[in-house]
Length: 366
Image (tube, rainbow, N blue to C red; front, top):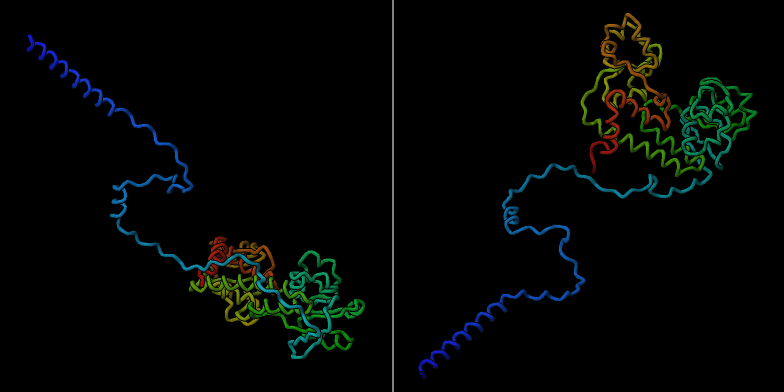
């Protein structure tokens, strides 16, 4: 009997131990309580981008190095005005050396100028001194305001009576013929020969006018813009060896030679001027032009060539390369001359050239 009781007690103890073991295992498997929120001021690393796995990192490290594309060296310049420094005001008296080597003294900024020269008129207007012009010649037509200016003659003849009634304090003329007569009537005369053969002299003439009328900053801005555009164009076309042949018709088959501003322009753009052996301007005969057979003709009158039976076998006519400029910018050695060069580039080559030339500063940077 005692043995039976002992066995029962042993059995009960065994069940009790097993029950306790089962409860312990279930507690261990209970979920872990969440960690309390802890604030931090540190920003997470790239919160918007997932971190690469170690496998991705390894793959990235194993990629071969890619060759770098050739990059043109470019110097970044902070935007600034064309006038980077303040130009000093003119100190009078100012001495101007004329083309005939005679010195003219200007004691104060002139306010009543007779500008007997289309280029001088455009320069004065460009620097904000157009209101100082009281007289000019009848061939001046730009800008539109010039139609209200008193005309004192045509391009090569003056009306002395009209000139004297205007009581000017400065007379500017581009040829020598009337200089002595003007001076004998007690007029202050600046004689500067027309700029006929060097584009780079145009900015210098603009600066001269700036000094005369004390508009130095304005003149510097216009001259600087001209020079920069010209420099970019010149740099761009140094990469070209030879362009198409060209005949530049100024009217009735008159054409400029190599020693003219237009001749300089054709050389600048690597165009082959069929009148390159001409000095100044010369009128071609139809026979000579047909023999030269240019690839391009620039003219204000295309029908003269298209409708003339004698010209039908010329290359420019057959290829419809008789071109016309929209402005007369290349006929006047003033601030607009550079615009005329750009227009010629557009109609002969491509409008895209202009954007490329100036965006890339002549296709090269220092």
